[in-house]
Image (cartoon, rainbow, N blue to C red; front, side):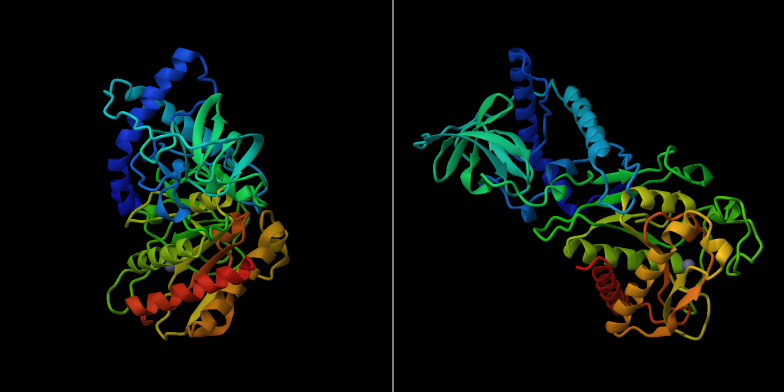
Length: 446
Ligand SMILES: [Zn+2]
């Protein structure tokens, strides 16, 4: 995924964090010297923020710094928000390594201390009310940032003034802008600890991972930054786009049984292409190009609407077969939407691949436990598209036994947004993305 994974803001951020990194090194040394390093995690953050604690929309969250490879370790509860504990641990470990490498960097900054305000003595627990709130060494927005804390984190407050609060952070006296503190705990703490942004690779211990044959690539998790963040992760899977994928075969079903419908692989087959190459539009455009353009548009709209987005592919080639894509989505997302265009030539309209009404298939796990969710998601997406003015084929569904569906443990849909002669101009994709977003909103009751 290379350069494609980094948004422009990250490069700017990287320049700004150098001073903070140095501060973290100094602080690490201080803490080591005083023997209180036990829970301290050096955090790369911006010491150059001009306005003290920053609003969630203005900055990358602390845990969005590239922290190496993340294998989101969500092992259970596939329907709930993605567990972040393992990812956070991995990221912390990676940061420790990074910091160790930078310990030779010279100190460049000196904290500036302004006259301390009058504090009313208090002794209470207070909670952080925003994300990326700076904990500073002194009462000044130019003072060193000890850490940034997210919504729901708690600290002990020992002194209060209108502008600044004196707090104890990891046995150290620090300061936080009072407007970002509350004595009331936030209602939804779950959203305060999202999975860390970054690469998500196939963890071989995940259920069904062993059925994948092509899995050296990585998906990329992006987090919404606005105050409207929902704590729901949508996997956006740009169909096709795996070099060599059509010459490798994987099992259609985890239990080795035969496909119950035709399609790109005939009924009765037990194996299918690990990832097919896709069709070519009547105007000569390759389907994977269009599914990628569609995925990028949908990603932007989902993030703006407050969804976290797991992007399976952001370049022409990702080495993840359909099973790897599905298992990654199962473990790092709350739903999975694969984008496709069909190979017919009559502009028949959009539809989703519904779970076949075949009792053997619907009794095979994990289909048995999830087929109703797949169909419900598909129906929501179709109604969203319909309301956006997109032409819909028939009743919007076509029964299909797909590898994706056969391994999915989260609501999962292959949606065909048109066919070889459908308009795939930028404007058409924009409309489709609006419709899909509306469908996602409807599915999650947003
Ligand atoms: Zn396709």
